[in-house]
Length: 319
Length: 319
Image (cartoon, rainbow over all chains, first blue to last red; front, side, top):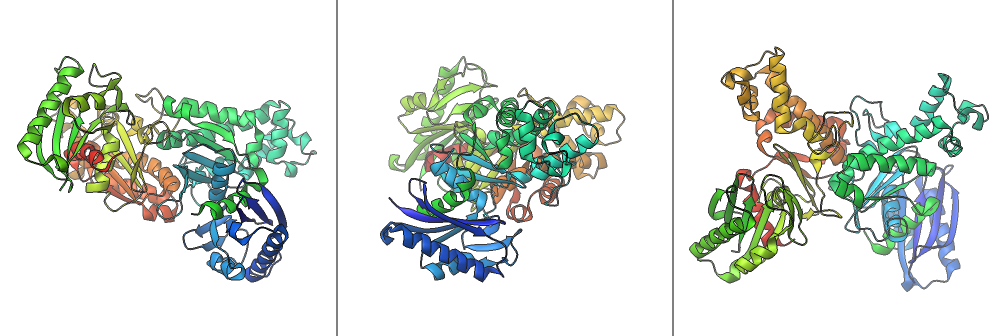
């Protein structure tokens, strides 16, 4: 059995796992990401945790492949540089692989978190056995990763996979990226919540308000999902609409990329059958039959561990 | 120097060229495709032409790579089967590579014409030196081919690249494919002409009618291009609109695939700078800056010979 360390550097928590070549996390630690003064102390803490995990594991150095780190931001995965992390201050233009390599004398790989999640799902999750995969995470933002012929596809300037910013309607709502009508501007967490709150304020009948304890500031995608699970008609229609938008983009990508698997992860994906049913229906309607039939749409399998497992995977299989 | 035969089986003409490994056609013949009673006589004519070209060339059999055939329709490129050709009757479920192999004792490769055009442009045309390429042909239909890491990308059921049927607006105009709002339903030749004729009938001021000899049935994309070249404001606006639709789809694909080259060919592409300017402007507006900057948008270079050269290329480089 081989082993690798996967680091999931998130805005809230940094999760570090020792992962074996069957994709199982055999040891793990996590700590709050905020509160470090700049990168060096945070990198030091990562190194300390990694040393502890490795020392405690008893694995032979010959069985250790290296370290992968996934981050929520723009990176140069080829040269191991983090350009910018939106939610973690003090991380501009950081040569993170070089720094960790010096601290730990190991091979270190960097990529953005959604690319690594796609790689993890390919080797150990919902995309196992597939060759060409579109991977999407639905959350505050909408991220994407593309697998082509069983390899992570990064594109000509390492920025491929930005599915959240495929434009559905150039006259549509403003998106955080500065554009209008991107997929993310329709199905990002906050957009869904904003729409629901506005509808309730306009008098929409639904149990969502009650499920949020009567406090509209407590409406979340989870609450909307709960209402939908209880057959609240309006909540169901919200997820159907969300699925429709996602399906429009997936249908186009299905026609162009003809994937055999589409993996949907992230918090919003927990809405379950009502959401997936709507996505599948839309892809079935809008994509070529031969391509739509081939593209199996599935939920992500690795859940909250996807970041760690994906990051460890790149250290095992290489870039 | 190596050589291959490229067959461009079109609805009107069948063009056959002997192509060398520098991408030059060193000998060629063509004949009308219609008027053969079924496949066998047409295949026989192809074989006779190919024998003539090879016999007249004096090339050594060791320097001959084989034969490629490109067709405008749905094929199984892996098994060499033409499923259906819309414009040539009697070609359903034809094992064309097997039949030609028996007639000519040579390696034979089959693919659809736009895939092969993309391959030809990659090796010998406007995509030379690029790694990740989106190739589009604008004509009666809108076809596409995708190059990933310098290889033709066919997808999980060999149907990748259907860029013409990416849906821009699910409530949009009906498309020939049965769907609504596909790119082709906005920018297919006939759609552009229909729109122009309708606008003229509604009193639109433009020189297009005069350039068509006063006969609206003679309006073609070429006539509209001519008017635009003479600064006819309405004709310019037509190409700007066409470029906008194409740009919307290219922007999405640029965000997802991060290509280094986008090649645009086919009759409509002859509209030139006014069309390309509008495509570039739209991609610049709607795609991520890093990806938009990387994606150089260029006209196809191989023109009417693209089909033959592309078909010969697949015989030279293999599937």
